[in-house]
Length: 76
Length: 194
Image (cartoon, rainbow over all chains, first blue to last red; front, side, top):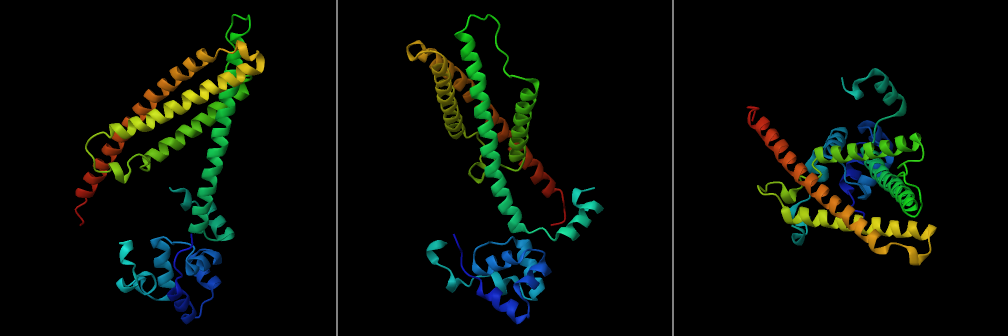
């Protein structure tokens, strides 16, 4: 089942001037994996999250942390 | 030296490209399905062949028991299959297949759960073995000559044996997991770098 889209990652990648293929090469995965992470179709491991953040020069919070206001309280 | 550290492997990685964690995870799921289908399919065929030979012997005049395998190659193939399945089961146990969160901190053996799993395994095997014997027998003799009750009794005997064996293996893995966890915690406590 597809998850939530990660539009912040897409924006950060665009801001860094990288295509999906560029980012994929930088972190050592395929372009499809980057596409799926942005589309919410794949949950990356923490190692990959860290590698993506380093490549985009942002923090884990910037890309992967949900604010409490965005979290469904019933899901907790 | 780890396999990943070998120069030949590193050269291959450079040539073939990086490993993709998503593709590895997807491949693992696909191979798991393939392994289960292949191994259990082969086991079912093996059981049926074995039972069919034994049933044919019961209805024949031959005094010597038939061999379990037609050729040594067939024997080697099925022994290899069983060895591979045992290795996989052992590795799963080492990775915490039995030591789940449900029983992670419990001090007592989850007897009820293990009895349920063992009971279901034993019942399933009893039914499969009895059904296979009846099907195999119906291939060689008229239906009125099929030993229905004897086949059911054989299935129940085999199912009971499997029930006991499964319960014993589950208990052994539970205690092994507890020992392993205690060892890991002791190593963490003695690390002294917290």
